[in-house]
Every structure is written in structure tokens, then in C-alpha cells.
Image 1 (cartoon, rainbow, N blue to C red):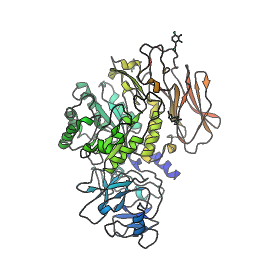
Image 2: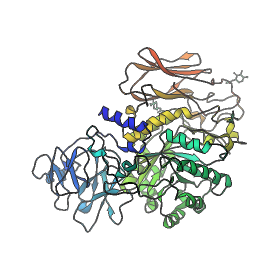
Image 3: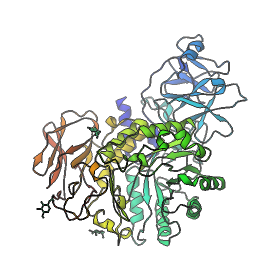
Image 4: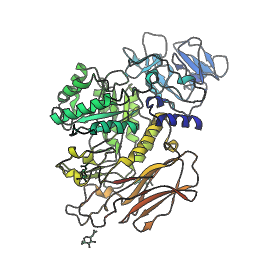
Length: 609
Ligand SMILES: *[C@@H]1O[C@H](CO)[C@@H](O)[C@H](O)[C@H]1NC(C)=O
Ligand SMILES: *[C@@H]1O[C@H](CO)[C@@H](O)[C@H](O)[C@H]1NC(C)=O
Ligand SMILES: *[C@@H]1O[C@H](CO)[C@@H](O)[C@H](O)[C@H]1NC(C)=O
């Protein structure tokens, strides 16, 4: 098992992004229903009747009575006992209930469908490819890899090389989709990671747009979700053009798509013209159904506008329909089947924004939760839709009429852990460059901030967040390999990670205007996240804040993170010690100020080196 994980991660850290969609899975084999597929995964064999696979250690009993083939422990029918205790013969498969209430199994990520005029429980198709078939009911999701297409369907016009990963003898992976293995480079299907990108002024005489694309690609991100607040402004169109030129130059390795900002411009049709301008670009991201992806920031109240947009244009629509500020407590998260019912015929997937942080008004320290995500994801999957989770560090805004803080602290690594557990179809980092809300992970360019108060608390020169990128790269590799946070790995033998802390205490008592809204939910703490190599032993982390050195924290293989309360004024440092010797460390460039002139809740983020 371990060897194959390493193999996958080695691939993931290379330039060959798409080929790491293959995932490692925990699975067990038992008597149960067969997998409906025309090509079988490693460890399973085709039933002679065709179209079905059983684990190679079991016997295949031919389909009968509108049921699919059964996988039995002996060469005699075991249908009755499977019917009594329905399940898939391999726990990595998902169980669906289709025609006449009969069960069948699909790879995770595919959708079970059936024809009411047929004589089989059901078959498995790529999300969005159900056609006129009826979507079956998802009974339980398997532990296996999320795949994006059935072996026979092709959503993109790439070369037709068949997938080969199914037969790789050293690997316990399930399979990559045929479309991703065909080119090995183009982001496509599910399992992708995007970063939300605010379209601002980018000086066209610089290489800034190109750097954004190159840096994001190097970090393992597949595409930018372009957030355009003003779809007709000339600066905005210039930035679009620069980004598409830069992305096209990557020869399909990095993609772009629009995320309509309906808070800034709530008329969906206003966003159509730039979309039409670029949807044919070779850099435009296509969804699992082969159509251009359109997402959004907000827009729940715009049902009829989305409807007419979807009627007019062939897109893969994955809008953000949750309730601003509410964390995962709103009806969207607690009762999606009624809240989203009117959207079911319009969307292809759901993007949850708000669950990336706890509620914006919690007033007390709180950990981010994925309970709401699990509810919406299960609803989405039961209706054949995909689900996208947000990943973010914090929110701190002191501009544009807002002055507030939103947790914060260990939110970023905690959320990574949750995403690796839940394994949504897509992940979106919020954000690449939104300096105004302090949750950027890439460069923020001065030309887009000139004249704003944002420069008082967020810019790349003083508050760079780039040190979060190696952590995100390691997370992306794990997400694509389908492993947990404890199985995350650094790219080499040295640990990677970052330490982050606020420039001042949360009370900010001497600053005019006082602390931001929701400051009470903050902790005066030094935060860290470190990814240790697999097999690590005898490692610990020593944090020093001002004059205080805290007792050392044991570090294990994979992702370690924490929030160490008791931050003091002065310099901050964190040191990884392995078997008594310092391995890597992070040292503050800027001290924590006891008596600051501004109250800044943005973080100084310092990488380990
Ligand atoms: C948040 O989670 C950490 C463990 O990661 C735990 O120590 C802490 O008590 C939790 N905080 C709250 C407010 O629940
Ligand atoms: C960007 O602005 C910050 C703050 O005003 C300044 O410190 C930094 O030097 C500027 N960077 C560039 C590249 O102009
Ligand atoms: C507030 O400012 C006064 C005067 O500069 C200083 O003595 C005091 O320590 C400051 N208090 C805090 C909490 O920063």
C-alpha cells in the first residue's frame, strides 16, 4: 500500500498533473453485487456475460431476474443472501438502487442510471451523461477513487489511447478516466482543484498575468475561477485577455473559467458577453460533460436568470447558492433537498462557499465544520450532480465599508483534513489573490490595489502568503491520490509547511476604532502546519513567541497542525527538531506589536526552510 502511495505522490509532484487522478483506496471484498462496467479494474475480472466485473477472488454468477451479475464466494448462486444484505462485492464501489428496486454497483464518481423499459437494475455513466435514462438512488458511496468517466465514454476530443492504469501490477489504484490518461496533461473531469481569482487591474506591460498562471500551475492548481465584478470595464477585459493569453501558452495544462460575481453584478446576462468571448479558448475549462464550466459567487435568488442562461447556452453550471455569512448553518446546508429543489433541473453541480469558514458572527473561537458539506454532497450525488468544497485560511477585511474578522487560526489545515475525508468532486481555494479579504495565497499586484486602504493591511511585500503554497501543493497531491491528511507528503525528504501569526493582539485596545467585528472569536496564538515525510519518528516542533518557549509538540508523518495560544509581543519562531537536530525552521521577519498603530488581523505567513 505504502509503495503505491509514494508512487502516486511522486507523479503528483511532477508536471504531469492529470495523471494523478488515480487514487489509492481502502477496500475489502465480500459477496455482493457486481460492478457495471465494460472494462474491469485491477483486482477484478469480467463476467462472461459482459458489462460486469467481480473481484477476481469471487465467482461471477450471471445476471437474472432484472438483477445484475452476482459475485459469490462459491460457484453457485448467492443472489438470495445478497438480496437479504445488499452490498457491493468490493467496498470501494458505490451501491445504487435502480430498476424494480434492484441494486447494482458503480465506481465512485459515476452515476447509476436505468431504463424503465429495460431488464437490468442499472448501468453507470459519467455525471451529466444520463441522457434520457432515469437516475438511480445512491444507497451508499464506496471508499474508492472518484473517477470522472466510464471507460467507454469520452467527453473530450483528445487522442483515444485507452487507459492503462487498470492493469498496472504494482498499483492498488482504481483507474483514471480514459480522457485524462490520453493526454496526461489536460485538467479535465472531476478531482480538480481551482483557485478563485479576482479580476483586478493587471498592468499589461508587466508579466504579472503570466506569473499568476505559472505560479498557480506550479502549485498544482488546475484552473482559475475568474471572478469578474464588472464584466464590461476595460481594465477588466484587459486582464481577461492577459490571463487567457498566458493560460493558452501552457498548452492545455492550465485552464480558466468564469465565476459570475452576482454580488457585484446581480444580472446574470451582464456576465454573458465575456463568457462568449472566451468560451471557445483552448484554455477554457470543460466540465465532465464536455461543456464549458460556469460557476458563481452567490446568486440563489436569480433562479429565472440562471434558467434562461442555461436554456440559451450549453454549459456545465456549478453555481454557489448558499447564504452569505452563515457558515454551514443555513437551510442550504441543513435541508438541501427542499432548499435546492428548484435548481435541480438547472445545475450540474453545487459550489459551497460559506462552509469554508465558521459563521462570520460566531463571537467565540470555533473550528470549521464539514457537516453541512457532507449533507449537501450526499444530496448532490443522489441527484447525479457534483459537489465542490471551498478551502480558505481566514477573512479579514478593512476596506470598502467592511471591518470584520472571520476564523482564522488553524482553519486552512483543518479544512484540508475535512476535504481529504469527504473527497468532494472539486475543490476551490478561496482565493488566489483577494487581498481585500486577506485570504490570498498568491501574489497580489500593487496596480490593482493603488489608492485603496487594503495596502494598509495586505500586500505581497509585507504580508506575503506564498508560504502557504507548498502546503496546498501537498494537499492537492493527497486529494488527487485519494489519501488522508496523515498520508500527505512533502515533495522531498525535508518537511514543508508554514507558521502564521497576527501582527498584534486581538484586543487592539489602543487603536482608534478598536478591533474588527467578530474579533472575540480570534485567539492570540501562533499557528502552524507541517507536513512530515512518511515514516517519520522522533520529530517535534518547538515554538517560541516573544520570550516564551512552549513545550515541544510531537510531529507525526503527514499533516500536523495546531494553534498555540499565548502569543507574546516580539519575534516568533517555530523549529522542527528530528532526533535532536533542527531540520527546518520558520522565523518571523516582523515582530508582534504590543502597541500597534493599526489593528491588523491579516497574518504574517512564514515558510519553513
Ligand atoms: C478545535 O480543534 C482542536 C483540535 O484540532 C481542539 O483542540 C480545540 O479545542 C477545538 N476548538 C474548539 C473551540 O472547539
Ligand atoms: C507594493 O506596495 C507596497 C506597499 O505600499 C510596497 O511596500 C511595495 O514596495 C510595493 N511593491 C512594488 C513591487 O511596487
Ligand atoms: C496603550 O498605549 C499606552 C501609551 O502608549 C501604553 O502605555 C499601553 O501599554 C498601551 N496598551 C496596550 C494594550 O497596547
